[in-house]
Length: 261
Ligand code: DGL
Image 1 (cartoon, rainbow, N blue to C red):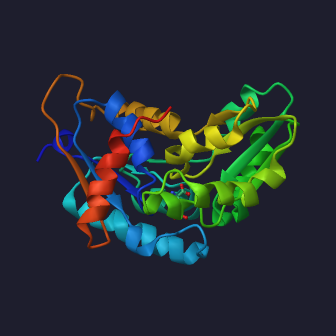
Image 2 (image 1 turned 90 degrees about the horizontal axis):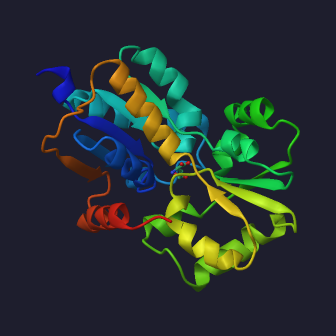
């Protein structure tokens, strides 16, 4: 089969990467996609690097066996643990990963505090420290480890008292008068954006994430290699999940259709 006809592969530890897929579907309207959520092994964000790497390779190898022309690691945690090794293992394959959007947060900063919500694993990684060193530019950038937050999205719980209690316990201690931006540094969190905004109430805080940037980078890479469909054609989008539960697939489609503001 001609390479261009193959789908673009997406993977995440669960349903979070759908926030990146959503942008990709919008800016690459004629390409086929296959999304694989590894919810059975979620969360990745509290596991050690070796385990995350092994799980990520397992999913990627399965996608490659089925045939893909490009790959998005739509998970900050898997990106930090595995993307360098994946690039070494598959030098011919266009691979993009996602990182917390610290760079745009700093670029648009007016001197206020920048919070970065992410999994404990993403925050512990050297890759994250390098990212801060490289882009911080003297700004106050504060990591907020959010163990247990991705589970709300996995369970389809996008609002409510338990979520509010979570924010109160884990986020409120970091919120200062001068907090200007919150970076959503895990692909699950954009699905909580609406409720987070409600929780923040009157505070004028920008909520940003790297989903569009990542999708745009993937598009650029595919275009460069002549692998992108630019002319209208019917396309297929397949969503799969390692949990043998049809509810996860229904929930995935629901999330994909949910407006993210
Ligand atoms: N969606 C993943 C990320 O972007 C993390 C969720 C998990 O802990 O598995 O980091």
